[in-house]
Length: 107
Length: 122
Image 1 (cartoon, each protein chain N blue to C red):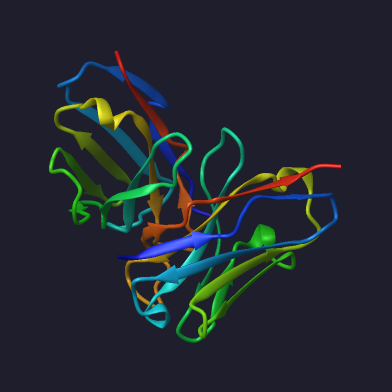
Image 2: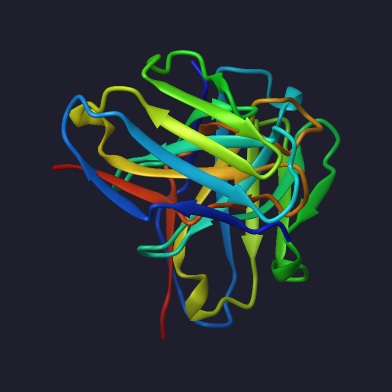
């Protein structure tokens, strides 16, 4: 199975800050990577697919980049409503696997 | 609008089975696949498997092989996930999710159900 790691596991930032989360795959997954946001008690929400494509309706402050084994997810200006846990997910190989998540909150 | 509505919470004893439903609306059911993802309390997301609503093809996570069955009823646009021989570590919220990329892809989950809590306890 492809192992996904994320760093940091949690972060605290101020409103308006730029926030960056990294995701690393245990082997080359090309650009077959998605990012999801999950708020407490809610289902995950797709934000970014194919490493860098913004899902319809998602604010442009969210972005993704990377290919191969190393990926980055960025919130350009953190908003209070962005408090959530963020997960990366690979779809290069079965089984599909998720990173352990990065919990983002406001300082 | 696309909606996936799941059945309600369940409490089961160890060794029992549970069957969770996921009723789709707002799109052509047979044009997409459905994956099931679970989340144990306070833990991350685990992909369980996938079914094509087009042809019924399935792919299950190896760790659940032999205990899980995914089916669809195209007449009611409903997907089902049955998990047998339940153990305490199967306690989780179970989600269904539609695949963005169509009926044969197992890739990207664009719409999710609200989740069904399954509690396994003696």
